[in-house]
Amino acid sequence: MRTALARAPTSRRPNVVEGLKLCDGFDARACESPDCRDTKAARLVERIRSALIHCLPGYETAPWSDWPPSPEILERGADGFAAVISGRDDG
Image (cartoon, helix red, strand yellow):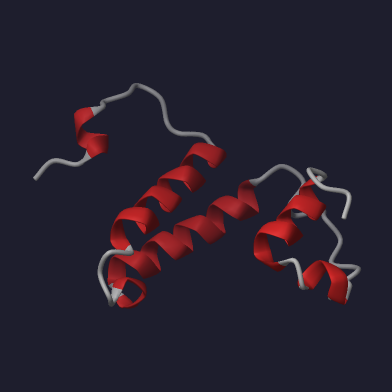
């Protein structure tokens, strides 16, 4: 069976954000399996995701300060936390 990537040849490599979206696409399709997190493929995708995150501009120089965030931010869950951190929501 051919994958979507095989059907869509391209002469360029995906950028970091596109690579992260590819990882999310894998997760979305793989989550239908009850053991999806326990497969070699899932572990590979997680390692790829981690490597891509380290490639984001500014990642290596970002400080590790202010951890953990306030309880109010943590109570908002992952999406709320991401919104505050990204500036999409001032909290």
